[in-house]
Amino acid sequence: MRPDWHLRLARPEDAEHLPAIERAAARLFKDEPELEGLDLDHTWQAEDLRRLIRKGHCLVAYIGEPLVGFIATQPFQRELHVWELSVAPAAQRLGIGAGLMRACLIDARNAGFSAVTLTTFRDIAWNGPFYAGLGFVELSDPASHSRLAEMLASEAESGLPRERRCAMIYTMG
Image 1 (cartoon, helix red, strand yellow):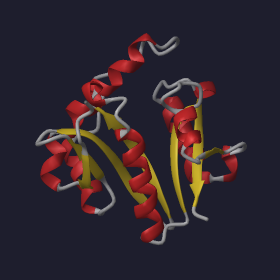
Image 2 (cartoon, one colour):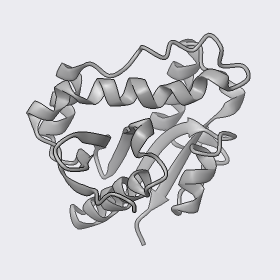
Image 3 (cartoon, rainbow, N blue to C red):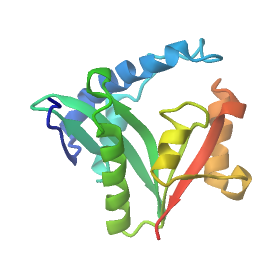
Image 4 (cartoon, rainbow, N blue to C red):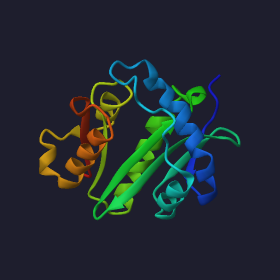
């Protein structure tokens, strides 16, 4: 039997628990070719997450008491940007990641955002193809969106392989 999970708006006190979820979820990258040097312990800091949470669009997932997933977002004018979507390994394959993203899209639409954006690996199943399945579209020319182009450039400077990264957008209909 699959456990029941629930979503709610993140609270500032949740921030202390989120880096451990992100760190555990990042372990999935350890076997990815070309990512051997990726620092899997480099996560969002609790204080930075609290700042995002205070903006009112971050969500957490929980099963019983423990938090098992989260989505951290930030408004940029009329767009909501997804900085992080993580689900603890023990809670993966329950639809939690998709549920968090769908709830984020509903929240963005209700809040009047024109789009939701993110950057991700285009070729990893639980990244680019996952988001495409939820309706995100890869920007064919990231230079056409200066904020996302700058984010991709910053990621490349930080050591992420530029050729494997992409910017995606979900435009509210």
